[in-house]
Length: 248
Image (cartoon, rainbow, N blue to C red; front, side, top):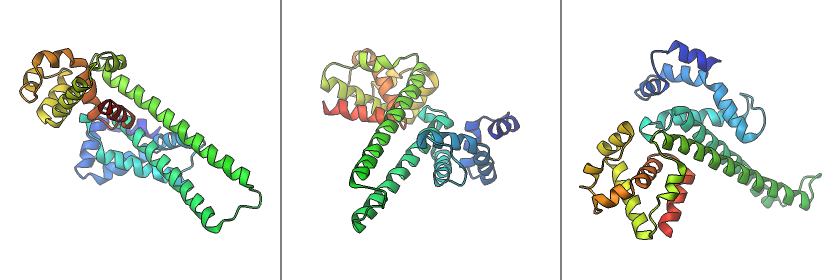
């Protein structure tokens, strides 16, 4: 595979280091990387479209644009690998494209108020229900993949997904304070660096920045770390969880 050859050729440099050079303006390296990872892009797009993807397909072009976007926006500080981050971005962009295309088709039908010769009103309803089911299944799949990625990130900190639930403060105010503490942590570059590099909560420095006692921070340590990881990431569904927590 081209991606393996690319890595072999650049074996003294990690993929993330390569991206850093690209972000500094190395256009030729960007072109090499995109060319090498076309199979990865096609496979990712195919998992959304549920069919084989050719390079001439519009969806493949959307995938390449999304991969380029992921390269531009990637930051190792967010805790995920480039490929994990790229996979999420590509899938979102392709789904958005499919939804937009379908919406445009519906608008066209509404304006002309006509049906295809072989399409009855009942068929149109079935097609719309199929689209809704398709979107629902894709959302479920993305949610599952996001959880798997998050579980892997948690494991690198010696935590489990269940810690997010089991160590959640019981009272709403306490949960909000813990989330606010996590937000202050990720907004502070030095503390965030300590968290990701040393895999521990910088309690001594953190307690000086929040209106929460050291004892409370220590008691909620696992929960605060898990929330900080979510806030530092592009986990859409995990962030929806936080909205739900704050609303309770």
